[in-house]
Image 1 (cartoon, one colour):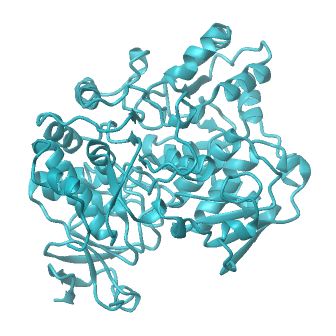
Image 2 (cartoon, rainbow over the protein chains, first blue to last red; image 1 turned 180 degrees about the vertical axis):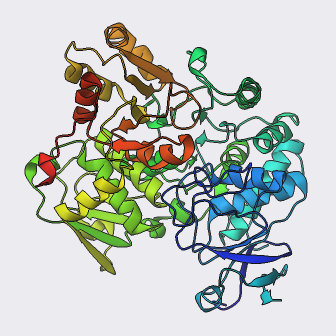
Image 3 (cartoon, one colour; image 1 turned 60 degrees about the vertical axis):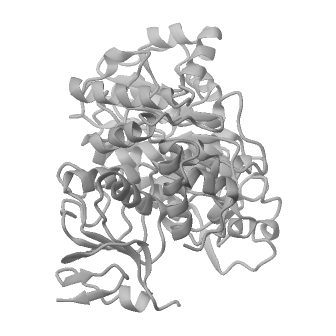
Amino acid sequence: MADRPRVLVAGTAAGEVLRLDEPLSFWGGVDPVTGRITDLRHPQVGQSVTGRILVMPFGRGSSGGSSVIAEGIRAGTAPSAILLLEPDEIVTVGAIVADELYGESMPVVVLAEDRHSLLRTGQQVTVAPDGSVVGT
Amino acid sequence: MSVRLTDGDRAYLAGDHGPSAQSAMRVVVRLADTMEAEGLLDITGAHIDSCLYHGPAVLDFADWLADGGARVAVPTTLNVSSLDLLHPDLYRGDPDWAVQARRLMERYEEMGCQPTWTCAPYQLDVRPSFGEQIAWAESNAIVFANSVLGARTHRYGDFIDICAAICGRAPAAGLHLEGNRRGTLLVRLEGLGDDLLDRDVLYPVLGHLVGQTAGHGVPVIDGLPPSVGEDRLKALGAAAASAGSVGLFHAVGSTPEAPTVEAAFQGVEPEVVVVVGTAELRAARDALSTTGDSRLGTVSLGTPHYSVAEISRLVELLDGRSVHPDVSFYVSTGRDVLAEVGLRGWEEPLRSAGVTFVTDTCTYITPILAETSRPAMTDSGKWAYYAPGNLGVEVVFGSVEDCVASAVAGEVVRDDGIWGDG
């Protein structure tokens, strides 16, 4: 059970991994117009999340994150998937609502630590509806 | 789908309450499923953060619900928006953005939400009681409701807040459940002087440190004086929920689920103990400032929205003096609090002294600041955290005493003696 991916929002995605060194709040941390990280205290400030397979432990901070994620999905600036170590309701709801409103499914998956820790920035991977992540 | 639903829940999902309520219930059930909730539970109130405009998606969502005739099923308050409806001239942003932001606000009022427009709904006359199940969004409000009031809400965000309010139901999971409210780490304060423990400025700094340390856990803070006041707990929680994902903390001897350390941990031994002394607090204080520049363009207080007591303190500190003409001085507060401040006869003297009141919104989420080229000073850990990224302004964190002294002087003045600085 612990080893199987836990799918919070199902979908398919392919792209290049961006591994975040610290948790990120989308609200106040990502500009949905540009897709760039704007939190000046985040070590990866200035990098773009657009189209990336975003790997982070969990979200942080503000309630507004769901809106920023949904807006990013609408505008095409969102990550193509978010891979977490622990469930995060704010991230999940943003993706659920974008799915309901626009029919755009950005996968959100919780991975076991041994799997999560293998993902490195720059790797090309795909995410399947069952949550499995495979290198390409 | 493993969530057990009642006949009432199924009626929503079947569309018996209209298409919008059906959509809202679908979102609630989808989230409950991801939280591995056994079922849903009744809520008695909600607080909505979704009314802040972030671009077309949030308005599409509100239209999706409101066009189908959705109404909230429980008393529901509204968080800050992008506009100050009482002082519309304060807004310096794109006029088209303001039109969309106003439209969003109207849609939430149409759904039966109360136009409270405050991030501190716990400062309204009616607020949740101990043990009440609620669905609140807005990170500082969540942590206050859980920690200080002992009400029970999970860490909800935009969209799910209004969906829960429409259905009157929330996932029976997370911080709604007793067992998940148990402390996960002990923060033990050691060697702090009584003068520091007795100052407002300790609390946002401690909150920032606790947020960074606790992540999304439930921190238990031991070593504060007994019966810490609500404004201090508010500042602590807001900073902890910005620097981390804290939805509940226990302050031993002050918050209702923590008469003792043992009670806060529900009888289980703490797995992690973090000792915090003056050095750690100094580092957290320093992390809240982005510059050592002594020039000052702005002072911003009231994040979260200032209470009547905090504005009273401001009157006392200004003591008849005026803000330096080169400094813009903002106080963000709820319209209800400002009305009371007016009745007490403080509003006009403060305005004459150079204070600008901001209601219905906040200075770090919408373009209000007159300029951002010179640094801004704040007493708020949350404002210090977010303003540099949101507004592109350098920030200096200080006590409210420092903020007032600096505003009068026209440059940054800080008294760091209580922190034991050289």
